[in-house]
Image 1 (cartoon, rainbow, N blue to C red):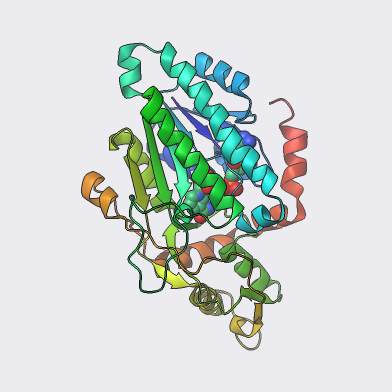
Image 2 (cartoon, rainbow, N blue to C red):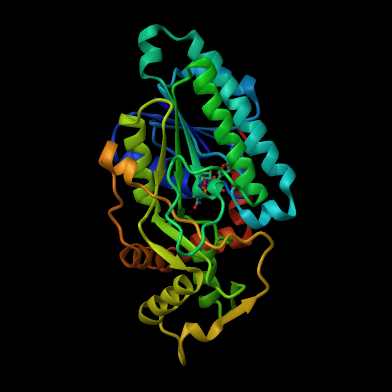
Length: 352
Ligand code: NAD
């Protein structure tokens, strides 16, 4: 059994669905169900006995320790976080609380649990921390991508809080021998992405006839990773990663934000044409956000060399699948935008 935190969020829910589709090992899905947690993503596995959902906060060491003792997981896969950069600018306290204090509390529970295990159980136990390439800060256009040994230089409260959590995880490996693994991945995209993030926001606004806002000049460069590729990388690191190591996970798809938005408009023009004109006509430029990093890109050769993982999807195939998913799942988008999923959780999942 594996213990997953944040498994109702974007990447976590994709991970749970992929995991259960590929093997029979059960998962405990521990999630606070913040605005970003959506059990609708997991509707197909809510009745599956291999999926045990528990509502709770990673900051609650007692609840987590009780669950560890009850279910005896062989691994913790830690996705839970506050993850939206813009929200971190307006309200950094929640980010410090969940990403730093929450990860600390989870590590404490894991340390206590690990100490209670037999030698054999300890040998297989892993604590896998899912993090971001934003901890490395911003690159110039001609700089080499970040490697696992690049210095940390986070620029937003979000990336600073993730950087702090990475350091705590590292220290628990070095100080207490907890077998930790950390992955730092680039920007994910794919199904079940909350519509406040760039790609789903553009798809939703375009179809609603609303403006498509682009920060500054739109020349900020990000590397884009299809979420299923990220999930496969995490499974591979869990399976064969060396304890104490860090692995960068990248999509080999560096694009400017303007490129991303134009590509989305072009695919929508093909799959869901407007009566007149192109979705590109809705693009507007808005004031840049403070501390906006110019470029992120990771060098993912270590995970390829050591573990044989590389992304399967290129940007155009992945983005096309993603647009198609949003076109096929209009109800999901509508529920999220109206907050209906939060009401559904309140009425259906009070028991957790
Ligand atoms: P998300 O915001 O979609 O989901 C986060 C999940 O964590 C939600 O289900 C939420 O309810 C849960 N959660 C929040 N606070 C919690 C708490 N205190 N206790 C328990 N659960 C809590 O995030 P995401 O985009 O799926 O990202 C998952 C992880 O991957 C994060 O750690 C993030 O930093 C990292 N990451 C994300 C990206 C990306 O592009 N989305 C890229 C690299 C790394």
